[in-house]
Image 1: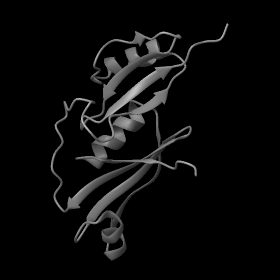
Image 2: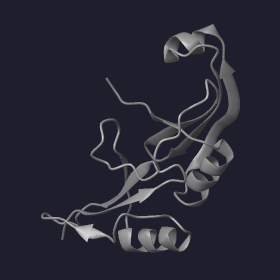
Image 3: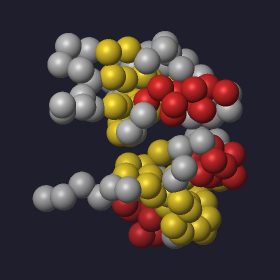
Image 4: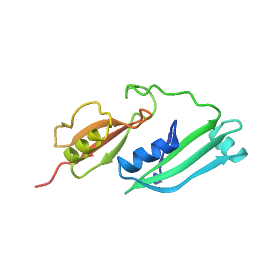
Length: 144
């Protein structure tokens, strides 16, 4: 088995594409394009589903972003604690976490804290996309 992508439901596909493209330097690989019909409804267990979808990619991370028109989605609390059940975050490895953090913070990305270092040398910070979905910036320890 090999993992393929992470799917994220967003409130505005246009805004989310801009965020992931302009702030996390991801590439728009496909879409936006509409999805719907009985096959999509069966896979998602949603009646009369209508959704716009796009695929974003950077390195080995692929995100599938969904903006649902029907059924009407319930908005997630953008300040949800990562201890809640469900996907708490996804990780993105960067070469220079300090420079990446500074660049993103200057562009208005909201973070839980400044960059922190953990035993063993791993450095990390949690940030939010426009809908409150959490991503983790990671810088792996340098081997000297």
